Image (cartoon, rainbow, N blue to C red; front, side):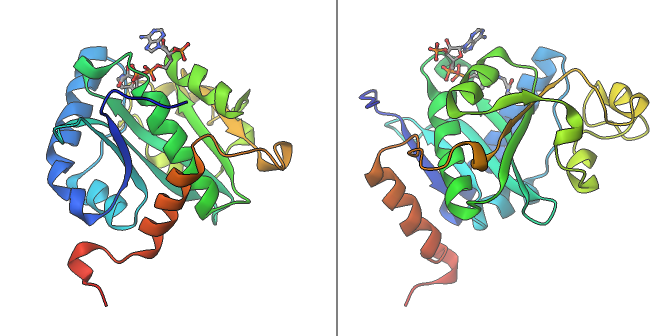
Length: 216
Ligand SMILES: CC(C)(COP(=O)(O)OP(=O)(O)OC[C@H]1O[C@@H](n2cnc3c(N)ncnc32)[C@H](O)[C@@H]1OP(=O)(O)O)[C@@H](O)C(=O)NCCC(=O)NCCS
């Protein structure tokens, strides 16, 4: 689908680091308002995601920050998760989360074609978008057992999410979030969710050096 509302959704490299403080403030502010848990991230972590070209950012026509998410691989690249999805409140309900997730999905499929994509969410909008992308709800035991992923939810001693006591009590079997999984084996030959010219742009970004690394 073509959108003509001026928003740009791009894979972020190091040249987008100037947005990191605003992204973090928006994530933290939203978590406070929702009163629900959201894993806490540091400035360095989000910066590294951009340098590694594992982040997607949405900007307005005036280059104002509008939305964000990043991807990370787990369990020796057998699994890939989208995390940190956020859309600035005033830009919500413009299908921005949908466009960001489509871009993150494409980025994940290009980088790790054999990996299973998964996510944890308590948001109806995200479940809806994931379903459109081909994710299905699964039980937690079908997700990665990589401790580093689950560390993002925290522990009762060091919580990152307000519900991490549930996760610990059930031995990672159940929690408040719904687990969703996209298994590439069930989608062989299916097209990517964004236009071919956008896919080419992502490939270009993936092979270009970050601005600070200099060019040829
Ligand atoms: C969840 C969030 C990312 C959605 O962003 P958004 O840009 O408004 O979502 P979209 O406009 O792309 O909506 C996608 C779909 O969900 C629906 N939707 C969006 N927000 C919704 C809501 N609050 N309640 C019900 N449906 C909703 C939309 O109508 C749309 O459905 P459609 O495809 O049938 O049109 C945004 O509300 C947000 O940043 N929330 C706080 C952070 C958060 O919860 N992150 C997710 C952590 S897993």
